[in-house]
Length: 539
Image (cartoon, rainbow, N blue to C red; front, side, top):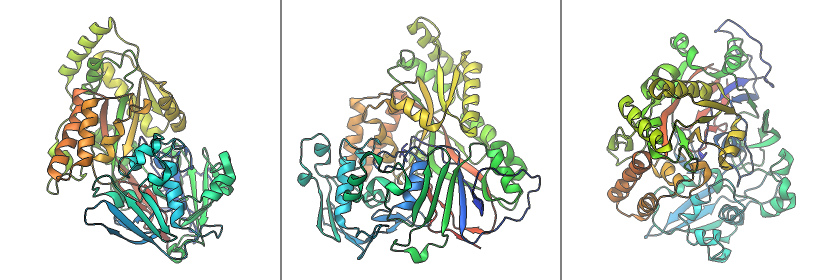
């Protein structure tokens, strides 16, 4: 997700049982017994939580919290398939343009207030307004009738294609058939909001746990963006009987060695391994690896003097040996990026998108040097370059390797500016960067979840605006023929990466983990909201 965003996000999480803080003890044994608790799981993330305000959230860390304290019409199940959540069912009109959702009866917010279809209308309209600062308005305005017009103040709320016929009936009208629309409703942007409560809190909404109400499996007890959050089971949740773990702690731990030591001492039940630890741990029966629909890439700022030069951007992209990066430097199950769209993402039903558009991104020293020399000549000298990154250990490792590749292939010394995730994102939003290592995790199993990110010319997306690219995306969105829609998306990816060189994909993220057997079904989705606590249980 963004930044789903997707954008972007680094979600490397570890889980602990029966611990309440980050001050772990060190240990040398790897087969220690986990300190068991029957009521608490603690997970660890490597980056700050940017925000839990729904219309401002755009990163995986924020989505993890929101997905577990709230819920949409549908939720991904343990097999990563959408299943009814707050909705009981839905019907689609013959022309595939009208969706009628029936909500479950007697739904409640955590404060006892009834949850109705009007809560979806209010929330979705807010996401389609200037109030939304997460860059995700497009996920609705591109599809819902008069959504874009409403965002631009060219239509009233009554004109938008979303209506509450009664407390349990929500009708949505789309501009064009959208085969993945129901999958979109699992995303946090589509979660309901209680208008009266939101307005009563004003600008303090979502700043503290008590300034929110909840409709998901859990409710927040405490929240701190930099140190973590505490969640407890939401007894008002419609499916509370199937939520097995009463308490969840989410902590921020940026050093993977700290987490591994805690795992070795029995304080953690699940840990993500640093690349350097993978070789010695592969024979451990507790070892496994997970692949994600997530691409880490370099975003170039096209308004920067040096990076506005296409030849410089092409040179930087060709200079990186991605095979070595993924398989040797990381070695954690990640794969070298050969394009923007992740491996295994849906293509035509027979082949994946990546198989249909192979080797769009490549490593070529000769081309890198040729483009570099041409770009330097056009600029009148070697540019001074700074690479903005996040400060977690994985991103630091990647940045250092990329820096060495630029020196080896191009002879240029690139500076690294390492920031917290929140600070990095803010610098990008403020247009205060040259190039940055960032990423995007797929929200749903379709290439459009990546491709439509570069249609609005935002600083975070490098200030990229292209009539050609936008036309391909617009045509793909209105196509009713699958083959033509697919071809538009294949062409769009080539335009973005080779013709315009806006981003340089680096790798498709995977990670290696160790898991103790007493934590069961702590589900990680390859796309959409990352982590599900709802299905977890403790032996």
